Length: 153
Image (cartoon, rainbow, N blue to C red; front, side):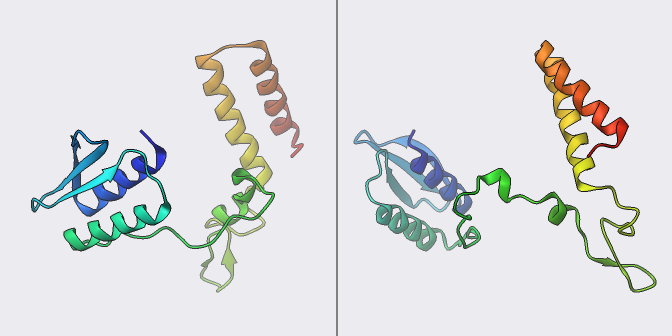
């Protein structure tokens, strides 16, 4: 199934449509709870057809699913590089004295981000070694564990 068709079927599910199969002409048949039918091409052509189909689903169902956030990723930065553990960890919570804390703790007591990253890497390696033991993974786990123990992060 084409990725855009999968995306369209997921959107249809948000609107209350269910996949009923194919109609024999290369289109998927989506049926709403109220009996309305929408057909989605198995090989989508232009993006405008997808948008028109989504608009039709919204009109027939009376439901408007939430839209994805607007914006574009930074150029030259892969998806993992855009994620910031610091931003995810930081919760701006004022304590009794009115000072802001990080993750519910005072900034001086908060665990460094690099240490958090190393602990996550350690858990990932341990899980991977339990599934597929190899010397390379064990060496990587020893390296991460020693860096945590020494405080080299």
